[in-house]
Image (cartoon, rainbow, N blue to C red; front, top):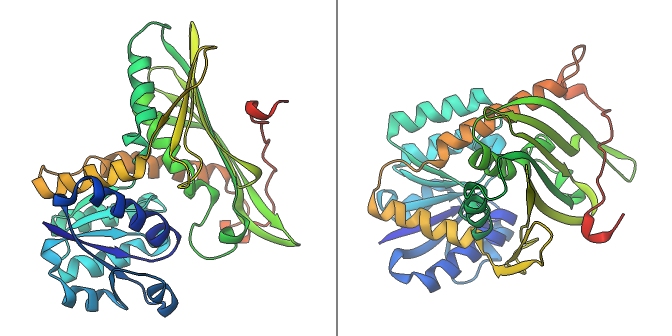
Length: 344
């Protein structure tokens, strides 16, 4: 039985991963050993109940054997390579890494080299690929009843003003789109970038460059066109994917938060089918089972290499030719589609 080390006790670590681990343990108790938490912030450590915490990675390694651990790396992506290097040097080999696994291809290549050098098994958080909703949509897309798939539209909108003004994700391309990119690559195969937009976040007279929202258009090898949109200044949350076929369409609505894990599926013009879909807990259970059985490398690392490549191409597409990215303070406003559920 492997123990778990959650590195970073902020929103992702404490708010999502610790909760998912608790529910996964309830459903599959023989798979999960003790849980440790690690964060240099005393307040973050003090807020945790029922787990042992450490102030540093070295202290965590002294509390429990790194060779018998699964690390959930839940820190911001900008510092990922350094932390993976330190963890690998301490003897940790199994990782669940929050998306994006890297902020650009150069960092992804460094992490890939580190993975090969130490034999790391890295599962990137791609929990929507483990969701019941995506599995049902994949089966429906493959049955051929509606003819060939023509287009995919993905909308991920939410207000994200407070967290976007702090350190962490460098652009809006790195916040929500890695989730949807993984899904469209699974549904329609490899793709190339056709177009991209990125907008600044404006709030209270403050401008946060390239954190207001992002849009990508992809063309897949089979001819399917995908459009992915994420507005981080939206007044309401929306997580919707629509598949357009030659003779029909399928619309999926992902759960909007950890407070209600229910998805909805609408086939053509039928009534919504509602079902429980706690994708992160499902992902955690499957990842830990993979680590426990030693079934080779987890396949999400290669998939997220494609995600990093496409987001990198989108960032480059949006980069002004006459100024470096760090000096950008203006960007075109994204067109915000009105969610169908709220009317036109």
